[in-house]
Amino acid sequence: MKIKKILGIIATLLTVFVVKNTVDAATVIQNNNGIFYAWGDNNYGQLGTGNTTNVPESEKVNLAQIAMYPSSPTYDAAGKFVKVVQVEGAIIAMDAYGALWTSGRNNVGQLGRGLATDAIAKKFEKVSGKYTFSDFTVSNSTIIASVKDRAGEFITFGKQTPNFNFMPQPASKYFDTLPFSWVSNRPVYYKKVGNNVTEIQQFEKYNDFTVKVKGSLETNQYNPDNTIGHVNVYNLQKYSGGKTTPDQRLQYFYDYDSTYLKVTADTKLDAEGFKSTVDMNYYDTKGFKTKHFVPTFQKGNNVESAEWIEDYSAKDGSKKTYTKKYDANGLVYPYAPEYTTDRNSKGGVWISMEETDYDKNGKKILYALSKYDQTNKKTNYREFQYIWLYSPLNGNTTKYSELQYDPTIENKQLRTVANGYSETVSRLRLSGWEDEVINVANPGNRTTTSKQFSDDGQMTNRLITYYDVKKVKTKTLYTKYDSAGKLISTETKTFNASGAVTSTVVKK
Image (cartoon, rainbow, N blue to C red; front, side, top):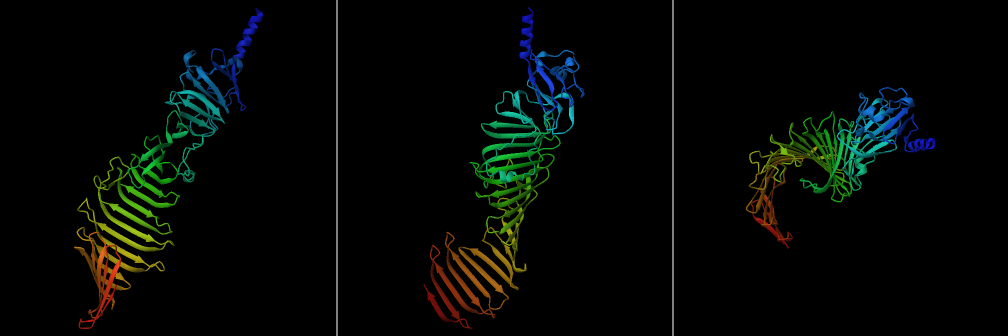
């Protein structure tokens, strides 16, 4: 009889599951009824007793009861802990309902209660929030819990946030300079489809789910801006103060196969979640930046009020900058759901556009100001343009032009100032002919030019007439071209003071 009793005690001891840690570990055992008891070291409050007093074995505590029912001498046995692990002075436990509980040290964020801190928690707290779990594992003092009945979804916290290398190359060289990023031990939710992580959220702490950063992948999306085209879109969003709308959104648009980055978009949002500014950069297949685009928005909506653009497409070091302004109706931003291909159907029209050109040495060589018609929303044609040309050597103005446009004709150039001389220029194109009359104060530099065009726009005839300082015709040059634009013949005539032809030379 005594032998059987001894064997029974040994069998009970063999069913005991003991988990220890090298950092001031308590002793945790699970008896053959599945109940976890603990005693011993409690210097970080890891036993959840509300203090840091060590607990003798004779007063061992039922971890589930002290966590879930601390004020009751009895507890719901169905709510017992089913797994308990110690992590650097803390206890991490999962109950039978799939909730996570933590108590003790938080020096590497192992409590799942926000950033790592030297502060300790002397009582258990449920940190799983809205999630329930099927299991959790610990690796390198980092807890990874599997969300129950949702394959590929995980919660992680602790010493090291996993390295979410789900961005395609050459993403790394762009993501290294993000204005915000993952904090190494802040709690994180992530979702995997196959081997690809498609969504990440980083929280202040689990039990209030204040999102700090959220990342997601939308595969093979067709963006309505036809300059971006068919892309994979990676989104990162930053939140603050428990807001449900982000403060900032970063978007990375890759080509269909995710082989190169096409566009980055950094969007700042106001307190109501409306866009305030967007900063976009466009790249070619080799990573060369071709355009920098910064629209601004009216307050309280996503209607664009102005655009600023830098154009590097020449790839020789030169660039062009543009500033476009819209009327009070603004422009509905292309990424808004109400966007349509008719840019004016739900928005306003241009008021003005400024263009500034720089050479490869950064010297300004052109400034142009265009003003647009406000009466016809469909056409919104350019009415006036003012152009200044500058010397890259000293920055002095070398030429100034004023032009007036009309939708019924090609254009009418009003006035040009060049090389110190003022020119009055009128240019009119009607019925296939383009007539240009230039009245120049510069002696010997007065001409008239008439051009004739075919129906497909090819110039077929050109007549240039030269005058002397007394405005007397001295020479004409008449040129003919075939339908392909190839020179057929030139005819040069000279005139005397009375206007009579003195010579005619024809070349074919």
